[in-house]
Length: 124
Image (cartoon, rainbow, N blue to C red; front, top):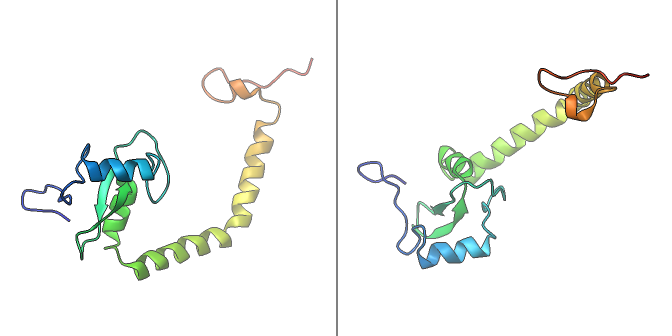
């Protein structure tokens, strides 16, 4: 939730380095509470916008995703169903595409798959 001047409002005691933040950081193993990624990203204290109570620490993409979905469980559920349904309906195409890529890479040294020096492995 933004405040005047665009600064993030963080519940008391949950700014980086404060006790509440450190407790959450340890409890989450230094990972985002949603995706579990560590990726060296700075974790952001997340809070319930109705009560103001802290919920956990999130990476920026997860925090933005929740914000864009207005913390609405129905909207989040609908988005999950939408993405899952699309992936399931296109799974056959994705499998075929993976197999085509695998066949194209056959006979190419793994260390030479990419870049200007990529070359087929000689058979003799």
